[in-house]
Length: 313
Image 1 (tube, rainbow, N blue to C red):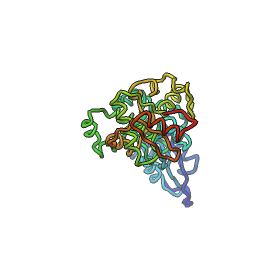
Image 2 (image 1 turned 90 degrees about the vertical axis):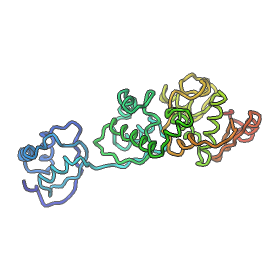
Image 3 (image 1 turned 30 degrees about the vertical axis):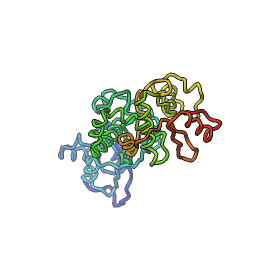
Image 4 (image 1 turned 30 degrees about the horizontal axis):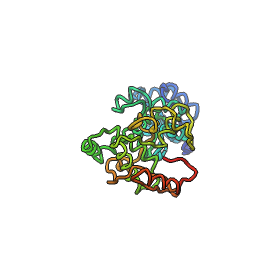
């Protein structure tokens, strides 16, 4: 029951998910953190902690007593790694970021968790994935967390923000649904480059929806191609705009099938509290701002001025 040595050097020890106590004890003995795996097993049995070990990464030292080591690995407070999910990232980008941070083994396992039907049903998320509900924020995540745990963490944060700002009340006032707001906010997130333009861009889309005009938003076309072909296209061609996908707002009326990214707080606010305008069009000025127009004639002039050699929105 004594420490292995007096050398108080902290080392990261990983306990894999599903590890038995015997395998953990054997690993700790082999790496020199305890003197006897059998003695450690008896200690855990005596304290009724044989099934209390939590997967994850922990700091341990050979100068710790077996009792201190046991306390650490059953504490449920493993080392946490900070990761920031940027606003507007979609599930494919989040999967790549998590893999780069070594919080998941493969991108596919996270995508599978984000599309798990039982998880979506439990979270009251309509559609095929948790896209739109993985709230962009900074998170502290233990390396022992599984893809499903990480997905839940981000969804839970979305609902926390939603409740904090009483958004559901505003949704009911607008006679719409939460999912429609999230879809539209995901498009605004992709289109807006300046904070002050978000409510204006949201107003354009709301105005078009009221007039039963197609949204004609390029980011929805890109997302549809990404879902079907796993290709991220930067520049769209005419044939891309004609491509039939459930997300292509050039070929389908109204909103796309689902969100195309995970919008931040300001984009959600912009959709729920849009500017009061008559604008129906906008085109990039190529400096991070847009020229907004109320008529097609005015819009075409703006396109000629700012996007001479590019197609119209």
